[in-house]
Length: 194
Image (cartoon, rainbow, N blue to C red; front, side, top):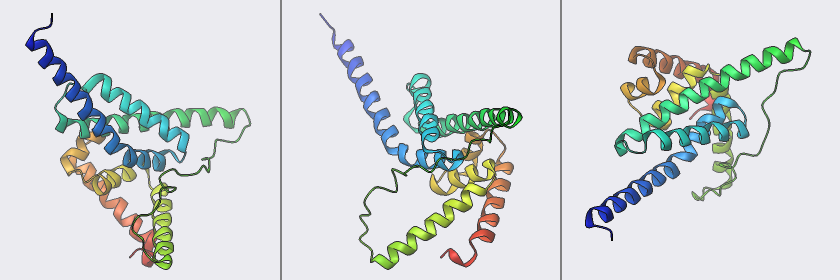
């Protein structure tokens, strides 16, 4: 027969599991876009996100719920750096063997396929889509560290200290990467950005 403390412990475990699932569901779309921009490939982005989420669950599920965001993004940054290292090595060998390096796949974007609930007029919708495409192309051209600093600060709303912890660098480096990213984006986007 189970005791009251065993039931309480089981209920706490279920509550923690539900909270972790809600966290992962809430973060998956934004994390996917970050990974897709960093990798330039839908399938690779999905693999990176899945690996980061799995590691968070395996290693940090017992941590405080407020810690999950920075921990997840730190894991994601690590996975993205690993992905870039592997791709660089793989491309070196492909070039040496006479094959062309892998180009980003032009796959359909599941986030873009979602219906727009804003119900703007068609002209505004087209303008927004062009603006976002232009921004995404400019983000693709940024160096990885600048790209990630910008996305973590702007899209995720992390502070300088949290972004530094996620990226594994100093706060000064985050400020530098972010500032350079903003300047480059302004140069690239010019008057196209509202």
